[in-house]
Image 1 (cartoon, rainbow, N blue to C red):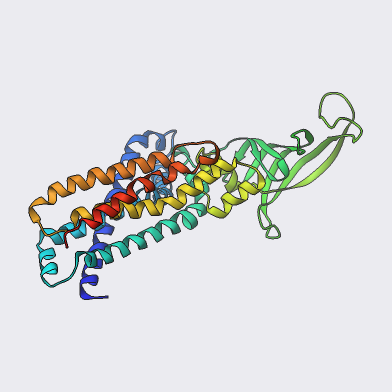
Image 2: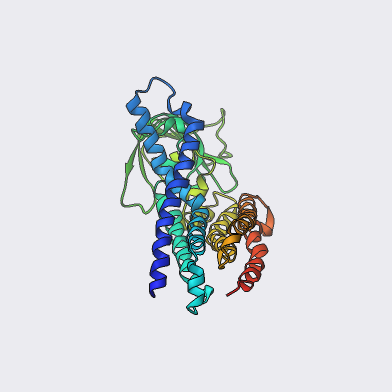
Length: 368
């Protein structure tokens, strides 16, 4: 690492921290401005409102970072290069015989490092706080109770509850419907109350302790449909083994809950048959393509700033904004586009196919 590399990297780190603070703060302020009335609903004290705001945005900052990581990196890198250009440092670099491609090397390396941070955020940090990301603004502390309806559990069972309390990890009037491979109801388990007990013996899930639990099933000679006619067997049950932890129940209250999971959890959902394979593939491809798109954004912007002409910085910056903005918008639209069939993953890669040739042309035209 040369003296020039250390100088550029130091500037990159400073500008990255500035861009991170400014953009994340702006995101939080705008969201808080729109949803402030939801935090102050009811008769909550000022302390509770403040605690809810801190809890909500303290967890959602990781989600905001995943959404803005590429833009933050692009801004930090271009600001560092533009500053060198404005202060005529690029002229000195060229006069010393150093290529502008060599100047771009530590910038691109920094972009790759920022991409690694994005991967850690989406694959490690966000899945660990996913159940908190599913909370609404008016329940930032997770103290409200709500109904749970027909969540898929192990062995094709469907779990419902009249009321679920995340704070006490209990369910009132729990109902579990067991089904066979054809979808026909075979058993029904009901309980007045269920309390969660983690069990380290199970790799996934744990046990719900039941109060007044009862399992009902028809005699084997009948048609296995639970109805008002026929003989019904009843059996007292005190435990229910489940994959649905209290955190998983909280998570599935959000319509976007699948996007908060890591890659291994997405694979498990496919193996269990809980979600459509095309949807999971679309999410996986979008997650794999995002770091590449972020790098392409950086490579699109760099050629506009690499130069020694101080007078054209504003014009180059405007063209850079137009090209990078188009790439970002097309990528965002593609990753949120739902396509059925074997081409479900294509929209996630469309911006890469479209702008990779543009990157090659722009880098080749750099005057160095």
